[in-house]
Length: 126
Image (tube, rainbow, N blue to C red; front, side, top):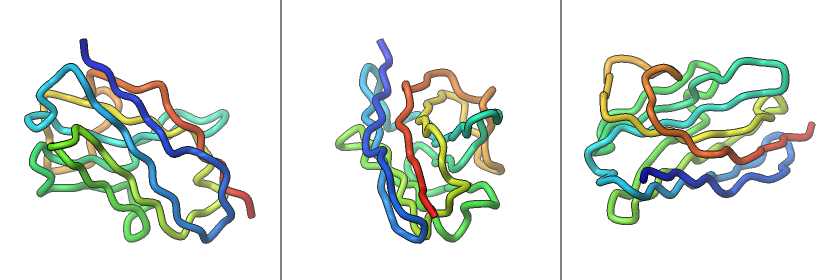
């Protein structure tokens, strides 16, 4: 059974850095693409960053490009999201997701992913 568990959420001040983790189990994670999504109150879930199976290709939403970095450690079945220069509009529930069908030419969307974690809350105060 595929399972994704996010951790690392919390409350931070604007301008600070924070790192999220997602442990994936139940699959050979090294052959699947992974992604981070977020959903702010009253808004639809949106893609933040996606990464290829080997980690060599990444894609980012324009709103986070240059500030966030997605990475993965396949030996530890773990996905990361390093968030720098956080802004109040980054307050959201953050989700990790996994898919067998990788699209590397663009930031993948909600519908491209099969399995999802339960989310971890990040709150950014001004």
